[in-house]
View 1: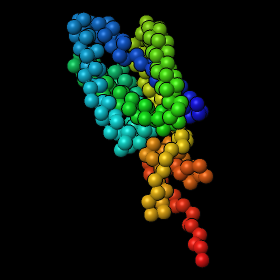
View 2: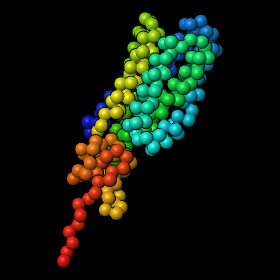
View 3: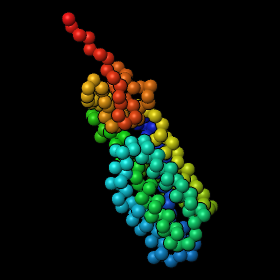
View 4: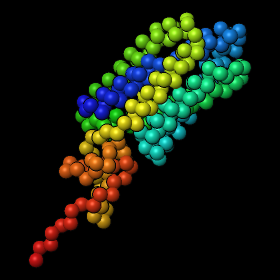
Length: 227
């Protein structure tokens, strides 16, 4: 698999490694003196916020591009997670968690589409398997790491979550090349698929393919006329 795909997998691992809010929010609320049913509202709030995130995330992936959607999701989720350090009051915390559930889950459709952009069709099954493996591995290790941080301070838990989310956003923002794909030509202008937003301007109009953010407008060499 290409190097860019491994960068994405590592970024997904780092992000999942710091997914502390979802599994620890109930413990955090009970530690602050709230009842178990009240703490359960925090967990339910994340799920409530995640409703609709897949659809909106897919729409943003088409409108803003995969990279931008992941960045918006990760950086936005990082800020919301960090705000939990200062937010007080049950309903204020639940409100932040609801927003976090929505924003933090926006990246999923874009991340899956990005794998399709990066990996040729014959290798996508292995790519998605590796991606899921990295997610599960990061979550398993993250639970143990989260327990260590929570035993010291819940503030460290939220700060760690925010840092890992921002790290994934930064990794996803890194320019890279996509897998070769079909191109359409209109009026002598070669246009790349939407998925080619990952490529840098310097790679545009390469001998193999035309790649640039969203739609490429690189003109093909004029055809010679026979006389």
